[in-house]
Length: 215
Image (cartoon, rainbow, N blue to C red; front, side, top):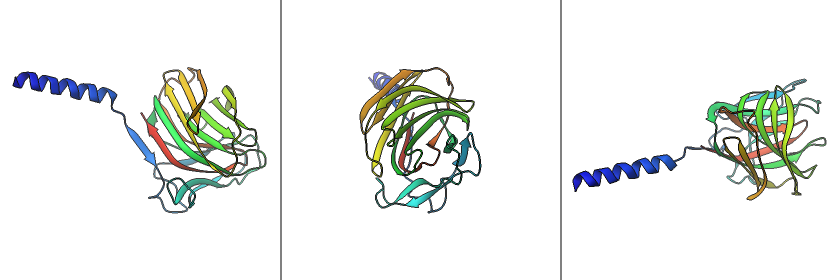
């Protein structure tokens, strides 16, 4: 009986381990205002001029008050720049990434989103919502050039928090806004794991909160 008990226990642990997942969450509450989370860096794709300013800010409207990570100053005037704040300390291949984002300002672009499987500042997948264009899209950025993989029309107001989630398994991806699946497709350009982070384009100043990576 003891042998049977330990055998069943070992099987149960193995099954649990197979379905267990690793989760990392940044709510930015433990980061001082004006600073970046440990291990995160500011870069840009197709950079012209100074890098944008990213920092933790106080925002009492944030989903986990009262801190958020935000692009607060663009510092450049090139509409083709992709502003990045990301980390390669997290190695993501498959799983889910989610964030709350709030589009604050921007005349040429607004909003932003999530990057994943990032090799460097010029190679990654990106999902972004733009309230100026009323769309939600997933792109592959390869050597600094962006290719649309999926697109959906959706109208959500700027200045309000929006929940974004990306699901990636192998070459299949799905994109969600406020819990509704709007995008799906396949792409095998980036097959290896990579870093994760946040993105805006051109003059889009955006706040982010509750950044979560489940793998």
